[in-house]
Image: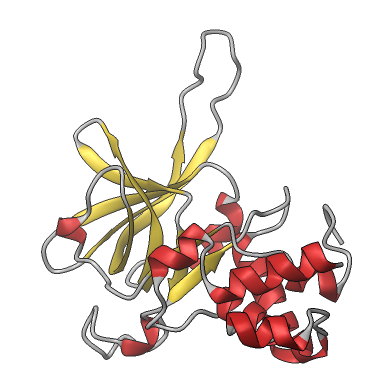
Length: 220
């Protein structure tokens, strides 16, 4: 248990801080600096790179793990200044990756710092055409020392196995009047949104699922 995530209930009610729209996978050439993007790319080269100290007399600069990835038309660099040892065990030359993160610029090139990656085991399908890769993915505020993907897995496990145990306390008449989902369904819709979800309403906190959970908290 870390930072308040001590029980299944804590995980169920640790709601996403945002949602990544991975329904449309981009081409590497179309990445826009300053925007978040999801794309599929092949690892062309990867290795640790020594970093210069930021200030004179500041000691060793450490090293980062970097991977140059690309598709048929362009390449982009992925960098990890923390957790490189763990990433190096996952990322190898010629791997096909699903990448999600914020696009930034370094000198004259585009890069993503600490992107989230998922290795695609079946590389026989054309890039960008795998329907199962498309999703609206929850992104959680992560306690220090906890990997975002590990936290997402823990939350998803809690939803899949325990969410139906969550009880509602609102008067039935109010629930019918406002056409609100049951608490279990509300939690599912926030942790596991479907492809047809209204992403603007989801991000704005104005869905019926949000309303149900807010009213439950106020009622109690």
